[in-house]
Length: 390
Image (cartoon, rainbow, N blue to C red; front, side):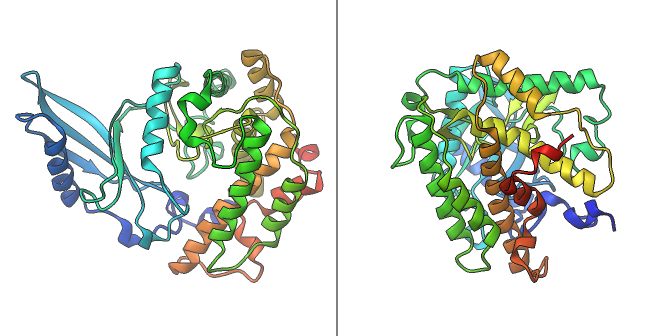
């Protein structure tokens, strides 16, 4: 078994790790439930018909995704609408996060679509009543495009790795432009005040300190009934002791700012997805996360003896493009890269705890081995990581 197979599970889908089989929804029942729900949402005489319900095999590790077509009558004309429902996970599935505000995700997407040119799917409805599908959900437009795969990672061999260097650079630059446009939304607190944490101020530093405190709380929640991680605790302590001063205003951060959450067509973004980590905070959170998630895959490629994509998403190239677009040169990226690695480590620790709980993995002797990128986080804390990056 290769290092890549060890990391991802031979023949397994990484995004399906620790997803209990009983959480899968039966398409026939979903069709009936969605059709009945739509009948209550649309005007009398719309006569909605739901077809082609599909639950993707590569569903996420947080909310569930359901793809479907819905046809109904509008102004006397029958129209077919390709749609997506994002559904809050059931409590019985040992969810990755302690809470899921589907309404907030819906509101962020709707506002982003109105306030800037970042391409987001059209948002149709948000349903807080769990009666229809057993949990809150929202419905949005389904867009066709290509997504850099997570399984196997795009840098192991994919349409992106087979593209020309010029095409990859175009995709990279366009992806950084997404961040620049989001961060340029004026007066974000006026439009996204519901994202502000209760103890956060208006500056980037104040907002970040509140996020860091919430991250500590998330770790405590994620480990309440299982093993703890000395490495994660050391990283949290280091981060709390070294918060950079930053009096600049907080911006809207996408949160899960990675190319695997963007649909592309001809190497240009056509849909920016997955807004559950949206926040008000320092812009460096988004920049560092985008770079780190690529480095995560590059380190796995190195483990597997593969060449990867060393000329793609390099930190110096990403920051130069961001500075060109915004006039702001990202600062303290070593620090925010540790924060990105810490956040990812805590999520993966929770994911592996789920896998153990559902009998899909055996607990390791050292709990820190549940962190797939343990060597990366250790090297970042030691200050040796970036010196060894090509």
